[in-house]
Amino acid sequence: MSRPIPFSERMDILSKDKQSNLILAIDPIYGTNNLFSYVLNTITKLGKYLCAIKLNFHVILPLSFTELQKINLVAHRERLQVIADIKLNDIPNTNDVTIRYLHAMGFDSITVNPFIGKDNLKSTVISAHSLNCGIISLVYMSHSGANEGFGSSVSIQSLDGLTNTTSRFYNVFYENSKNCDVDGVIIGGNRLEVLSELSSKNLKKIPVYSPGLIKQGGDIKSALECGSDYLIIGRAIINSPDPLMELQNIYKLISHRFDKK
Ligand code: XMP
Image 1 (spheres, protein in one colour):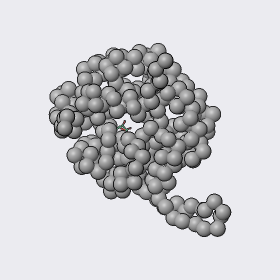
Image 2: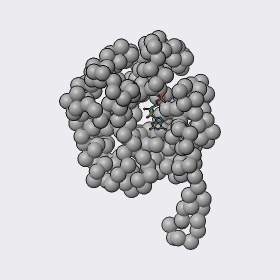
Image 3: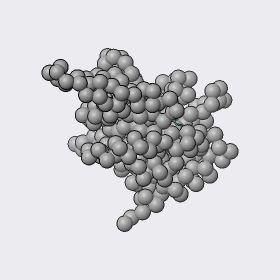
Image 4: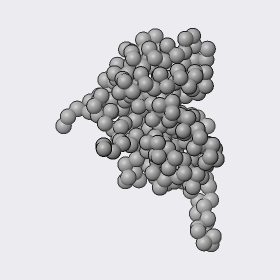
């Protein structure tokens, strides 16, 4: 029997095959008419230029279990992985039940807030991996206030309780994410210093997922140079008057990365 392919490998295979590291955040505006059809049409129209899509509360809250199952089925037919961006942040039992429902709907991976602590992050990863679902962990968010949490200092006591060292939350989150075998970390593509700093420590080569581009000020070329592996882009594409043309223009900026050497 063939072994199940882990999420990070599925992403790698699809992005090489489709020559795209682009992930579309399908975040329709509140009150979008015929939301289900809108999402399906967006996937079939744009899927060729993407390796994955990311669904957020914009879609997960209003649509039914069955509708989400159908969306994930169509996305898989288009050779797309699907990320549930719910920034899971709860006790292990609640995380486990949430993962089971999202997996039953067909999602391939789930975003998690590592603020839940190392042991809880580990059990969340184990729970997801038992279903061959991936976990992508927030390390530094892209929005303007992110430095208040992810960038603030934290004092860490040694195991024997005798010494204290100071670190930043994002360093702790990154180390914990690595040690817990997450399938990817999220670092804002507009956080170039953090991207560069953590990429230089990224010996294990954990894939870096970066939102925060275009609409939030991040530049695609700079983010890639500083260590982003996958680019998450939403409003700049889906709210454009011509989403397909906008996506094709962005695709032209990244596709050369996949040229055979
Ligand atoms: P835009 O429209 O700004 O959409 O291209 C970005 C998408 O990504 C989400 N987002 C984040 N998700 N960590 C995350 O896990 C982040 O730092 C972050 N910043 C933006 C946002 O909700 C939207 O779906």
